[in-house]
Amino acid sequence: MMTRLSLVPLAVLTFMRGFFRDIKNDERGLSGVVVAILLILIAVLAIVLIWGFLSGWLQELWDQIVGETNSL
Image (cartoon, rainbow, N blue to C red; front, side):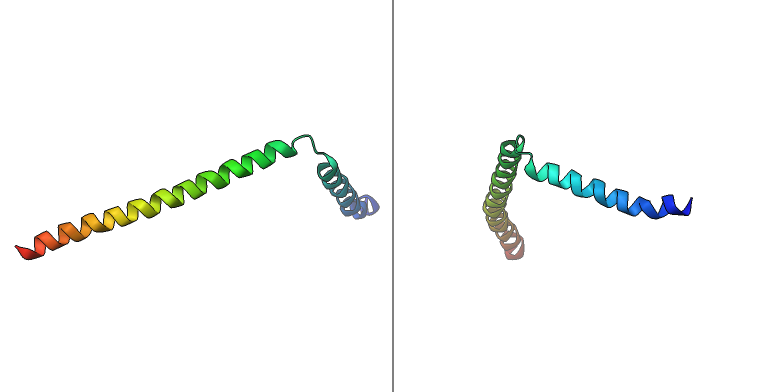
């Protein structure tokens, strides 16, 4: 029983090495992953750009609101 338990880490290590080797050598889904990463990158950049425009606009509105209430 102890010899089988001592072989478990070796079996897991062998399985994981084979698993990652197969993933590294498999190029079928690589283009899909690249497309997904590019789409995510474009979406994040678009959100950052929109947030920059909106934050400036919201700051101008807030300055107008605060300026008008202080002048009364």
